[in-house]
Structure formats: structure tokens, C-alpha cells
Image (tube, rainbow, N blue to C red; front, side):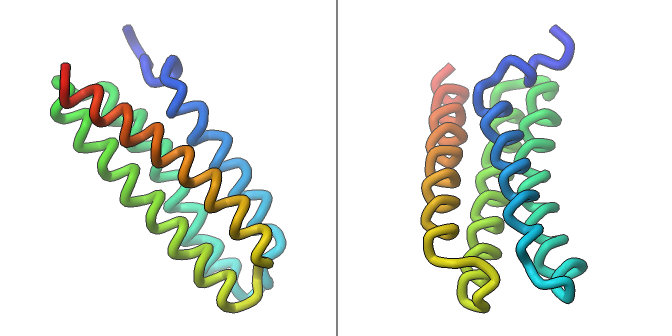
Amino acid sequence: MAFRFFNFPVYQKSREFYRDICNLTKKFPIEEKYILVSQIKRAALSIILNIAEGSDRGSDKDFNRYLIISLGSLNEVMACLDIALNNNYIIQEDFRIYYKKATELSNQLAGFSRKLKNS
């Protein structure tokens, strides 16, 4: 099936996460537009794109490698949010909300990865 990634719940969740990140970064100072905002948005987009790209690889082992890369990008997003919190670009409550969202997405990615390993 072409474009099978559309059917994966983790793909849908990652799209929602990216949309939410885009909305959150609108609050950041203008001087961070080409630095931290750009980095966090590229990392969040990388999560989605690696799921899509990996889904068309020849084997589950290859696909799993892309899921691991997606997890790395998710960690990068959280590091960026930690920097944003430390610099008072977001408040603790925003960080808590996104930490929870990222944890849910991480669990989905890790679960999907385990499923591929076991198949």
C-alpha cells in the first residue's frame, strides 16, 4: 500500500504534536525566530518525516531505525523546550503540558519500535 504511514496512529499523534509546537513557538521572542524557534520546529517536523520515510523502507528493521531517529528528534524538541523554559520564553505550566504530550508520543514511538522488532 502506498503511503501506509497515513494509517499509523503515531503518525497522526506526531502531526498533532507538530501543530501544537508551532502554536507554542508563536509566543517566543522575535529574536529567537531564526534560532530556537527554527530548531524546535525542524526537530518536531523531523519526527513526522522520519515516520513517513521509514514506513516505505524495505524491511521492519530499516523502518525501526527511522523510528529511533524520530525518538532522537523528540528528545531534541524537549531539550529546546527546556532551554525555552530556562530563558522564560515559556512558563512552567507550558513545559509540563508539552512534557506530557512528548511522553505520550515517545511511548507510542517506542511501542511501535518494539512491535517492529518482534515481528
